[in-house]
Image (cartoon, rainbow, N blue to C red; front, top):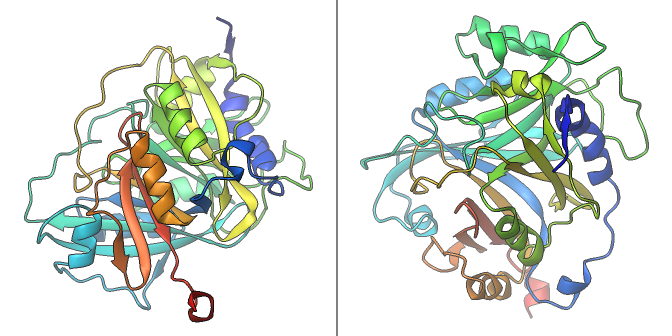
Amino acid sequence: MNVRRGGWCLALCGALLLCGAAAGRAQETPAFLAQSKGQIVGLAYAGRMVRDLERAIAFYRLLGFDPVIEGVDSSWRADPVMNRIHGTRNLTSRMAKFTIESAVSGQPFTLYLREYRGITRRDTTGGKTPWEPGAVHLAVAVPDPVATWERLRAAGMLWPRTWGGELIVRPGETRGSIAYLTDPDGMDLELFDRRPASLATTATAPRTGTVPAFDHIGIVVADIDLAKGFYGSLLGERFPPTSDEWLSGDFLDSATGGHGNVLRLHNGSFPEAADPELRLRFELVEYLNRRKPVAPRAITDIGISYVGFEVRDLASLLVRLQGAGAEVVSDGIVDMAGYKVVLVRDLDTGAFVQLFERPVPAEEGK
């Protein structure tokens, strides 16, 4: 096995370069799914289950997420539809909705936060590392990481993973611009400079801008074959044809707070639901020396993340997933104001994946 030391430029600096390839125009559907019913339209949103909604709202606003007020009911209520989607009974919850610009398309990418009460909730992320199997990170590119870092620190909402609790400096640069940190509930985020001077702009490079932007999602896997089987063979994630290198070194460890980690990044991509001609990176992170059993967890637990995909022909896709052994959490396909929604778990760590299909326009349904 070859391990590339000092490879953090590929792991984090290279996140932008690799996302550039992922941001290219969509190619033809892979042959193994081209004739299949049940297709992923694109990655649409992410969600996180929090302990204290007000505190989480304050954090994500400081990070640059924009709250959505119109049409959003953030009051405590027993939502029968959401209970069916989450496979729960008569539970009370409240939620908040945010958007942030996509670094690929410039369209809004959505983040949902939800808090439950009246139920015992395990803390799945408190005191845990970012390399726990099943850990999910959201990557956010900001115009000025130092200003963002200091804004969080001043508000008492900076929970860094990095060595020394500071931004990490890229090789050849003098100013810190990369770091892992957590939200108030221990869920990970990757923060980096949206416009690094060392990277040239190309036709397929990530968009540059003066506002924070969502860049990619990463999931730590336990068994890469199971993970690729689910996200690739079943959902259609596209991966590079070449094998990924194992990476290690102080630069990588310093940004995540590790020591001696050996990992490789499987940088696949899905279409972006807001603009399916473009692709968002969906990163499967494999640790060579941090493998361990996945702890039990439920969708209502604190620190749980999920990803949301828009699909075409949800019923057919669900049949394919169930045939492969995927667990269905929701009460089958749930109707939510005309949208069809189902919550499943992946075949590797049991990560939560929400799938939805838009209502058929009246003229198409005739």
